[in-house]
Amino acid sequence: MQYHLLTNLGEREQNEDYIGKIERDGRMLFVLCDGLGGHGKGEVASKMVVESIIEYYQYATEIPDISECIEYAQQKLLEKQAEERMTMGMKTTLVLLEIDGYRARWAHVGDSRLYMFHHNKIVTRTLDHSVPQMLVAAGQLKDKDIRFHEDRNRLLRVMGIEWDKPLYVVSQWTAIEPKDAFLLCSDGFWEWIPEKKMEKNIKKKSSIKNWLELMEYDICNAGKGKDMDNYSAIGIVI
Picture 1 (cartoon, rainbow, N blue to C red):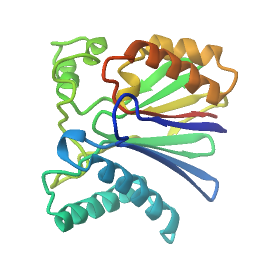
Picture 2 (cartoon, one colour):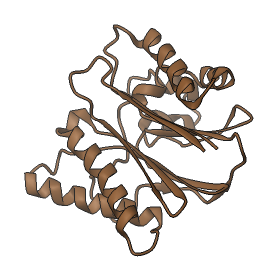
Picture 3 (spheres, rainbow, N blue to C red):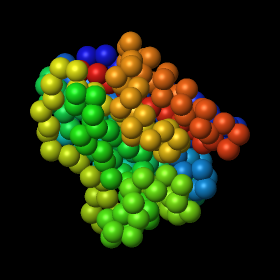
């Protein structure tokens, strides 16, 4: 397995994205969060959730289920909100991927995405918890039009909101094969590069690092001078 992690300010003054990884007993866990800038201290929320998930995964007596890691991070974030008296702030998206040999599973909440590639083609994408994605589900909007929809930043689910039941979505274990690939990315990344270009670049790549660099080049060309958001990605090739 090869992987590479990338995060960049874009054209903003502060990076509210945060990424991380951990290996334990032959398993790999990759985590990416995008703090909500309009809710105050998004950078605190994203860092806390990533680090809390990694902490729980690392130090639990046995390798925990990823849902336990998310619940732990959610509780830590709510406690931090209460401590800082910022119950209306400190919100973040989340996407994570766990790989155990030739199987993988993932989880997400918000509009940070996971893409799975098989034979250099996208075969799976997580569905955003956003107003535009809801419109797509209702047949009122095409999926490709999510990127620049006026309500694209209106999220329906995030970390840091009180919930009676989990708002995150966890996949089943999925069989993976050599040369399958994954891309975890924040909306500042995927909004500037269509899926066809992701597939085109993965065919051209000389390495996993080069794949992210090729996509970053396209992203910067498309977004330069347009108040580009922070953008982050984690690429993995089995």
